[in-house]
Image (tube, rainbow, N blue to C red; front, side):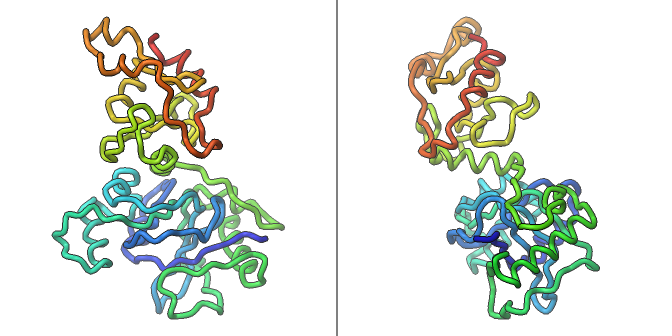
Length: 306
């Protein structure tokens, strides 16, 4: 089957900004339209090509996830890792590509390709594009390591990564021989988007679907050994997220919502939350992303106030 690699035409402003950010752990390679992207599996390589006449591959990243998102959510999740200095700058760039009025306040849906372990090559290390690349390509082209051209591309990229041990890419650069998938190391932004979509953009407790009011919660906090992983996440309405982090509510390993008596004791309030006590959460449709029982047990035992 081989491993796929995508070469995508890169917005110059996006590239120039991101390559100047130190210790960048993730990036959002967005497209102005909300077209689906199914060219890669998580762990395959997404490479950046400059606009002609600079026909070189200048960097890339490990593909983690793709979906169409409102530009406001993309900004909140990734901020400057969208390749813009502000939400307004990002909106202006989207408007320019979409050829819409720059004063349009619509929350545009854009195509987001979320990358982890991004890397940017020094100019002396830029890789010439494969001979099969056509000047007519305006978006991207897919290659596969099962073909000589794709294998040569894989080897050229890994040669650069292993030679310079570029930030965040040691796993890719250390591979020799048969090409393999690279495990994406999700950051906070990718975690938020993955959890939001895992729960179909609905609060796991109330089924609220007003997107600006929803937040991705870590079951076991990242600072306490939890990971940026869908199984360590729950999608909550913002107030429930705050209560969960503070230990006033929890979710049991059998996926039921529990509310601490201390809300009543400390605040003489909480009727709305007590009405939800004992209800089953809205479980993900993808069983492989269902909450980790061990993480939930940790929250019950170490965070929940009972």
